[in-house]
Image (cartoon, rainbow, N blue to C red; front, side, top):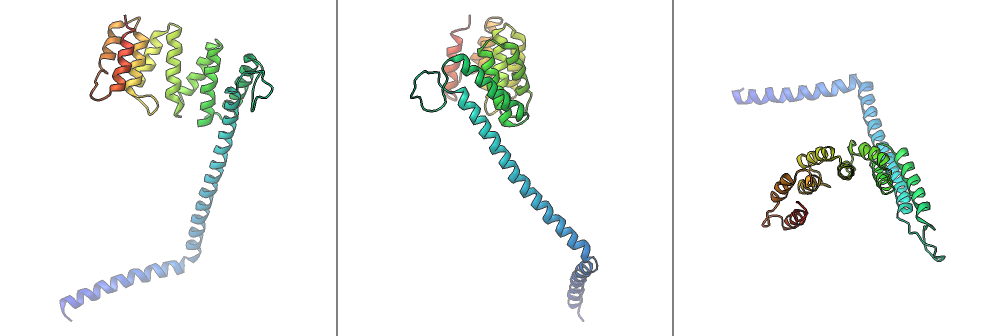
Length: 233
């Protein structure tokens, strides 16, 4: 037998041995193999069921949020032929909207829909002058991991600015400048920051806005920066 033939024989035997070992192991441990396969199928079934439950629960949350938004956006009218939800006066509507959003926020706390309801609820409370309640809800949403976190931070910063708490507003907006999101870009956060400090620190406000004036790259941003510059003392 030549060296080449011997090498092929050894390789063939090694392959056969591996196959024989795998077949022999499966035969000798048939129960364990079948049990492992059953476990894998069970895991896949549970994963599929979990996903189906998740989709169902999300659908339920979306429906609840949609119903609350229908109340919050319903018109105030005394027209007898009004189609859809309507309220006779603003006070009745506000009470119904706050209750609807509060219910969704409480029931679905920690979810995207729950955060959306809590964010909207804070806006309703701020419009009614309930600033401490609005601040509490905005803080909760801003600390969440949902997409509404950045929007809540912007609203909270504007609330602080209106209350004269410039330092707190500045801290929030500086964080958004450093860590922009899909919903609040660095440029937007910079303009908001400049507007927040334009009275206490007009020099910095001007510097922030001037840094955005790059017409060749972002004409829309430059226009917004120029508009804000007109209000800087």
